Image 1 (spheres, rainbow, N blue to C red):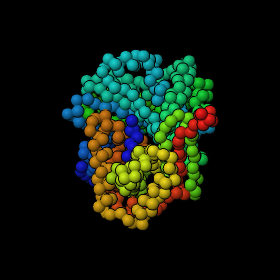
Image 2 (image 1 turned 30 degrees about the vertical axis):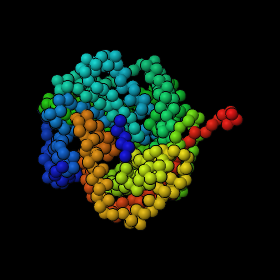
Image 3 (image 1 turned 90 degrees about the horizontal axis):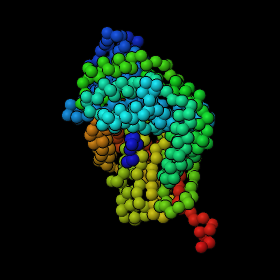
Image 4 (image 1 turned 30 degrees about the horizontal axis):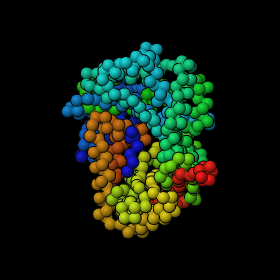
Length: 474
């Protein structure tokens, strides 16, 4: 499986936040706590049922959620700030790409901490600092030695509260995004992904990629005033989740966060992307590539929004593992035996709104229809129940332990928790999702094959090399 991120123990109960604190269903330790400065609203301690560590989550009165994962042997700490804003929030025509642009702008600094000073401080600390943007989130992170915690908290709070850039700086940075677009989309996989989403969606903002539509990117340098509005709408404490994982002093961290973020204000702007109409027939799009490249294909199936309240999202993933993983019949047939394709895999990319489950195939020759028919044959087998319960159990085990192995450092733990938390706002969403994974049955996989992985919900994007007219004459 292709994981986006570049994106065992007690029952995990449901938390219902109410005006007087929180209501708990289950056996967690929880309490409302009143700090001396009255900036803290509540605290919840949770021990994951699947992920093997305990978390403590605090919420400040301004809505900011902070989650601690203490790993005394780590030797470093990871500090992740996950903003629940991504390309899905770019609902105004002509303004796509701004979530990604702010991934850049946030490193421009503030009046008190200009961008160059920020960069110099990161270097002096021997720290790692970067960010990523996707459909549903923009995530910023720091990895540093424990004694640098006060400086990291101070620097991050400063830029999230007081970001400042001139119109000239905005024009420079937004102009640079065009160069980034041209570089990224010289890669055939990225161009194919762009074509897939543009074809699959007609109304929802998932229609454009994280970078945005090309014409919108070209127009960005003229949108300085709109950029200020975008920041005010979306960079607010109620849309932020901070994760601190690794070796650090929890009491010190909590006091530092209260002190530096307690006065962060802003009510935010709730985004309601246009609802995508049902897809009732298969769609196709093809790209002729101008330079030699192996043929490739993306198949995108419309799926419901990510949820841990039922097993649908988990069932689709396990169906993907069974159909397209390296232990699948398709892999054995097409890659190993017939050797007609280079690879087949699925993208494990959960989405906040109804999105796409994507299968990626790299072929040796452009025999697209043969590969599609082979995929459909295997889906049909599963939909008819031609799969062993043991195979489902093995797929669950492989997926779950692959995820857990990908949480081997403080950075990876914070990263994975941050990604899933941005989808539904729950800091322990990943643990709930893995619980749903454990519960998937043979019947659930069959239902996913019958109701989700069918051609009428599918968009197929293909790409292959085509010689120019001049080359054809030679």
